[in-house]
Image (cartoon, rainbow, N blue to C red; front, side):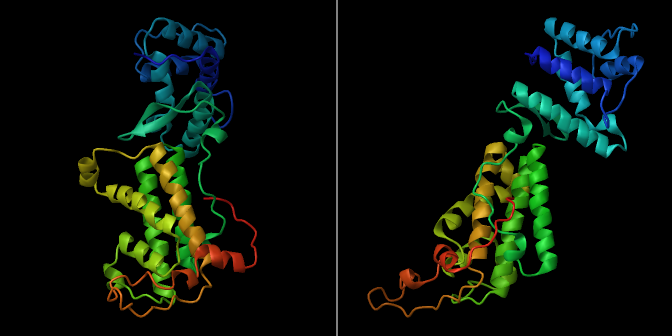
Length: 319
């Protein structure tokens, strides 16, 4: 069944096809007809000299009334990179304009196997629909990562994760977030004074090891430790066979759940950056030392307690 679009949506789509606003591609009448043919339309009439926007809009309306998917085909052609050879900026501007229009009709452009697709989404303005509901990132990356070169790399991955999210590349976004999370935790393990020893040499540690190590040293809170398992699970989908075994591909909800975990972890790491190392405690005779982390927990510094003692900083923009 073909998608049905509101008349106002078709009106705005006709403007994009005509390219009436810079930097969109301006199409003359005969070029509009050629565009519809490239979109897979059958029996496209020759341009008859009618004002271009009116002609394109009426064709879109007629095809929708005929019950065919030609309006959808035209929209997806507008979102197809092949239409913008060597015009990356024009392509990005067109894609943003399309999503600004479509989100008011409860759709947006996604991508599957390198091809644009229409996805359902919450109706609203594009900026509202794209705002990530999350724990806010209250610190800058440089407050977490002391190495300036590594901090720049981490910030770049945050930016790339957002770009992936905005364009529907959810698997890539989650993989980027997991990579970022492992990187900052590995950095903390490498440069911070720790009271609890590493379970294995640094090069052999993985994300799960780094999370546990950070928690044992009270660099992150318990909620960040537990929730990080979700990020770890989806980060492992960098291996296609793992995704096949899981039988589930990340979607927008997946990223909306994973991103707050990354923000919470970064906030915790910044809050404990100046904390003294947690001193290991002697084993208790009652349990023979089987639970090495149960003693003196109340006296250990936590992200919340350290943040309460530190002077307040101005908040940095969220991730």
